[in-house]
Structures are given as structure tokens and as C-alpha cells.
Image (cartoon, rainbow, N blue to C red):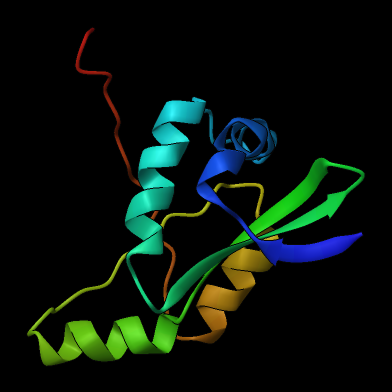
Length: 111
């Protein structure tokens, strides 16, 4: 198994991994989001690969760098979104001073 940075050609392999995490997406939509993420020097997507198959992925962001940037830009509130099943991520954010706020509504524009 190797750990490497995700490449743009991996989008069709990465989209099903995102679905396993509860984030339904298409290869095309994932490729667009990956392109935007790749433009940020404080972010990266890493994958675990074995025998040509992606086994898992993680998107990493320099949370402190983002917080510093937004504070200097006059931002008064930061929000992160995390699937309800991701207890470890919730503990990570709580340990850094984020508080849980559960009300969120989403609508598909075509309905």
C-alpha cells in the first residue's frame, strides 16, 4: 500500500469513496471540487492505494491557517460541516473551540 496525493485522473475512483462517507457525488462533481481544493496551497487530498485501487482518502486543510486568514479578513464566524456519523471529527472541532449547532436545511434547486 502506498499513500500519495490524489491526482485529477483519480476522480472516478474517488467519488465512490466519498459516497461511503455519506457524501454522494459524481466523478464530474468531485473533479470540480478537487480542482478548487488543489488551488489552495494549505489543502491536500491524500489517498491510500494498493494494486491500482483506492482504499481510502482524506482531505486535509490547515485549519489554523484558515482561521487566521478569516480573522484577519474580518470574518466573525467560521462554520465547518461534518456528517453526523463522524464522532472523531466532532471531537476534533470541539477541542478547538467549535460548538455544535445542528439546524441545517438543504433543498435541491430542481424540486
